[in-house]
Length: 307
Image 1 (cartoon, helix red, strand yellow):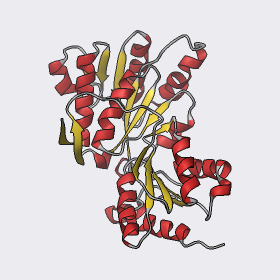
Image 2 (spheres, rainbow, N blue to C red; image 1 turned 90 degrees about the horizontal axis):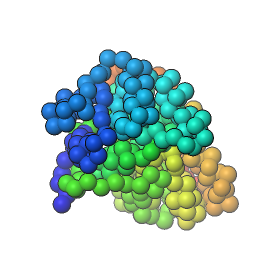
Image 3 (tube, helix red, strand yellow; image 1 turned 180 degrees about the vertical axis):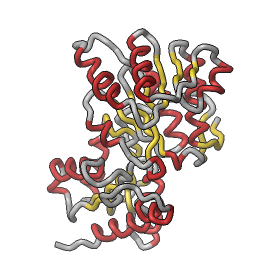
C-alpha cells in the first residue's frame, strides 16, 4: 500500500526497515541516529563531529561483518577514495565492503560531488530523484556488498510522493524512463528530473514530445537505455546540477557522441550551472541552478536544428 510521504521520511523508513530486517545494519552519524537509537539500542550512533573519523569507522565496521550506513559532512574523502574504493580490488575480490556513505549535494550545500564519486572505480553512486526512488535505492544500497555513495539533494528532503509502506528495492544500473516521447531525449540527474519533466510538459503543449530519463545511479550507469532512446529520437539534452567541467552531462554527452553519433540529428545540448562557485546570494543562486526554461530552450534548439 502506497502513502504520500516526503523524501526524507522515505529515507528514514528505509533505514528502519533494513535495520529491522538485518541485525548487521548499523547507523553512524546524522540526524536519523537519535530516533533509530531508541528502536535499535546500540546500533545507531550520533557521531556528527568528524567526517574523516566517521568514514574510517564505518569502513572498518564493514570489514568486520557489519553493514554500516554513515551520514557524512563534506569531509572523509581520503577514507572513501583511498580505502573504500580500492578495498575489494586490493583484496583480489575475496573481501566485501558493504558500507553506505550518505552525503548531501546541491547549491545550498555549495557543492555537487556525485561526479567526483562517479569518477572513482570501486564505488557505486546513487542519486535519487523522488521519495519512491530514495527508499528503494537506499534499501538496495544497504543490501549491496560494495561501497555505495548515496547522494541526497538538500532541497528534496521535504518533497512528497507515494511510497509503499512495505520494504522494496530498486536495482542499480537500471534507468527509469519517467516520460516517453519520440522527438528529443532529456537525461536528468537527481533533482533535475522534476525540472526536466516541467520542461517536457511545456514542450508537449507545442507539439514536441520529450522522453525524460532518470539514470538513478551514475555508477553503474544504464548506458543501454540512454543509447536506445537517442537512437529513436536523434536528439539529446542532458541536465546536470553539477558544475560543467567533467560532470555527468559531459560524460553522458561523450558516451552518446561516441556510441550513437550516426543517430544524432542535432548537436548535443548540456544544461548546467556556469563554471563558477555557487553564489551566496539567494537571488543569484536561483539564476545559477538550471531551471525548466533553460531546459526548454535547449530542447527547442535541438529539435529546431537544421544542417
